[in-house]
Length: 361
Image 1 (cartoon, helix red, strand yellow):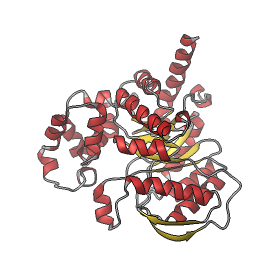
Image 2: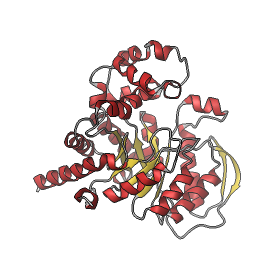
Image 3: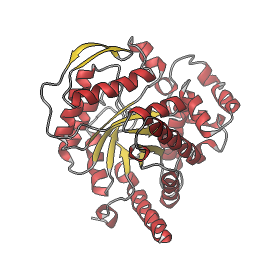
Image 4: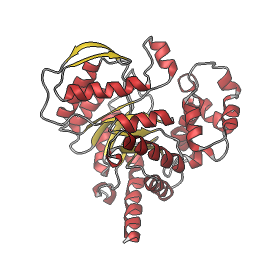
C-alpha cells in the first residue's frame, strides 16, 4: 500500500461517490472504500430518482465502511413525508453508528413542475428542519403550514444515537440566511470563487448570530469541482460539462454569477447560444450530450471556470483547496473525480495544510 493510502487527510476533505448519472450504483461502493482507504473524512451522495436512491446507497456504504461520514448532498423535502424523512435519518444514523449527515436542497423549478408537487419555499425548508428535530427529540408534532398539514406525528421508537445533522444547500443570500438560522450547516454550491465562498460563509454566520445561535457551530461545506492531473478530455467531462449545465439553469446560474460578482451580461450572452435557446425551459444537462455541454463553455468568459474550480496538477489543485479553507470553509466536498482519481490530490492537500500550519508557528 502506498504512503498516500496510509495517511489520514487533514482538514475535513470529502468527495462525492457516483457523481452524475449512473447505470450501476455498485460503483459507489468501490469509490466509498477507496475514499476511506485514502483517509478522506466523508463521502457524499447526490440523490437522483433513478439508480441513486439515497437510503439504499447510504445504507450499503455504511456497512462496508467504518470511519467516513456519509452525507446526502443533497436530497429534497417534497418527495418524502416528514415521517419517512425522520425514519430514514435515524435509521441510517443507527446503521452507521452516527456517521450520517442529511442535506436538503431546493432543486430547480422544472423538477417540481414535472413531478406535480409543490416547490419548497424558504419557510417550508426551515419548518421541515424544526419538525424533524422535534420528532427526533421524542415529541408529538401537530403542524399546519407551508411544509404541509400533519395532525399528529410521532416516532414510536428512537435509537440510542444522536439524530443526524441537518444541512441546507444554498447559493442565494436568503437561502444562506435560512441555513444559518435554522440548520446545522450549509453546503455551498459548486463553481463559487474563493471570494464567493468567503462572502457566503459570512452571510451564514451572521444569520446564525441574529437567530441567537453560535455562529461557529454552524458548519460550512464548500463543494469544489476538481480535475487534478487530468488530461483535457477528462477535465472537460469533470468540469466543463458540469459548469455548462449549472450556469444554464434559470435561478441557479443567476445566483452563482451574483455570488461571484460576475457580470450578468456575460451570463445572458452565454444563455443566448442556439443550443440553449432551442431547449426553451428544458434543462440542458438532461437534454444535451456531454460533448454539446462542453462546447457551450466556449461561450463563457475565460475567467469563469479557472477561478471557480480547482484545475491543473495535484499541487495547484491542493493550493486552491487551501484557499477555500482559508476563506472560511470548514470542510470541502470534491466533485468531478472520485476514489483513486483524487489520491495524489489528497496527499498534496495534507502537505499544503501542514506547511501552512508550520508557517504560522
